[in-house]
Length: 404
Ligand code: ASP
Image 1 (tube, helix red, strand yellow):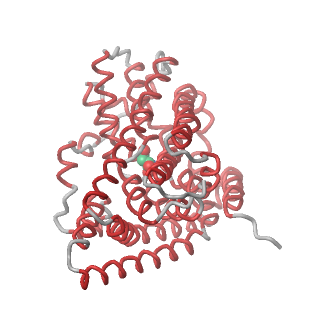
Image 2 (cartoon, rainbow, N blue to C red; image 1 turned 180 degrees about the horizontal axis):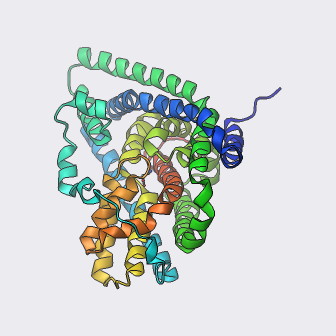
Image 3 (tube, rainbow, N blue to C red; image 1 turned 135 degrees about the vertical axis):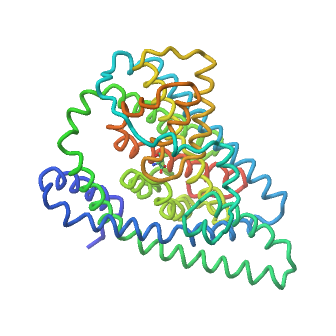
């Protein structure tokens, strides 16, 4: 008998988990451990995978000139698509105005929000690790990436009797980590069943009332995310990447469903790397550089969400934002999405940066709190989709021959 493809297994797990969460709410506690184990396994992989992939990616890129070119392309793509996403959000939220007349009775105080938002300058400074082992232990992605790029770059500067064993070792570690990843991926349907049934059971009672109150706002976010994911990004893959976006999307089913279920681009990273390499045919050199960076700094879905949420809050409070203030929203949404960690609900915390920047009340976060977790699933999927499209476009511009 032919084995069912993994993405079908995941889809079935998703549907079963929703039914299970609704109808067997009391039994969910017996299955959530599968989700916990799955997430732990993914997090276990991340640090060694990122470190080895970036070192082997950067040593593979070779010269400073090539590394510079690759970095410029990667950053340009990330900033460009995030801006596209933000403007899409801005357009939709100004068109529909979901916040006008929204029920302010919903707002609840959210404590400790101002303490959690760090200034952008401090975020930049924090990229340089005090102690790389500590950063690895804490999973500070930007610091790990920074050190790995430095390490990889200078590994190419030493004489070949040193350079070659280092290259070989990191390539080997990376290969092993990819094998570990493939092993963990096999358990995705079980992990997703555990995670999603837990989530559904937790929110089952208030799903309908929330939806009726917040429906238009949610539809605005989802509509804008769809425009970005189904029109803008595929167009970029087609026109700039000269590749087939549909074929690429098919190959990305497993990481996209995992992003949706886990709401974490970081946790999904191992699966994204595997899929972009194996199914779309992007080289290790490119995926190793573009994807870990993308999972950390490129969050189109989050950027779009930040912008829609901030304007929704302004509308709900009856505050008219001037053009300049909307410009500030765009800029801070971009910076905030770069600074956001690829973990669940990171976007909810950083929205305070934007609210502060344009002088909106921080309590406004209480308005969007109820539906944040649901929207997180969708925006994370768009975040991962954009990273993968970036890998294809950059690989193509480097002259790689792809499978899509
Ligand atoms: N959960 C998102 C991610 O991991 C970040 C966010 O909260 O927007 O990509």
